[in-house]
Length: 160
Image (cartoon, one colour):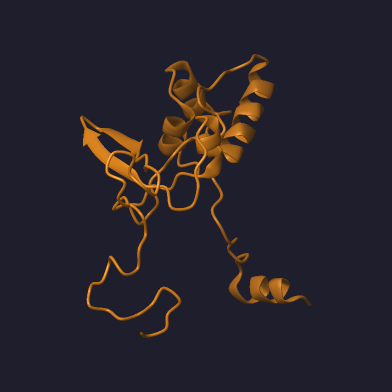
């Protein structure tokens, strides 16, 4: 006898499934679609964890009713949207940057400003290594000697 059947025989109940399985709620789904709710709102209302499950439920209701239903935001590419992580961090992936026509290089810096719920990142444009008007080096140049904060560690990790 298999382990699963032994457990069913001893407890009288089948073993609980692992993971989350949402239930199909046709009436609530129809009501939400007719109200014009977005995919994210419908998922929150029905307790659906992924867009794939919502797509399956939508396909099932389309098949049952014999008519097409459109849900705003269901087929948006998730890679072009920015969400906060559980740690409260915003991560902007390369697909978002490409969609906006922006390319970055390692070490690029930005200025952050927030106003009325709008987050604005402005790329700081660095000038050449020498300033044209003074002939002196720009303070933006990474000079290990100029940034002496009392630590004698060199950039390669060795001591002076």
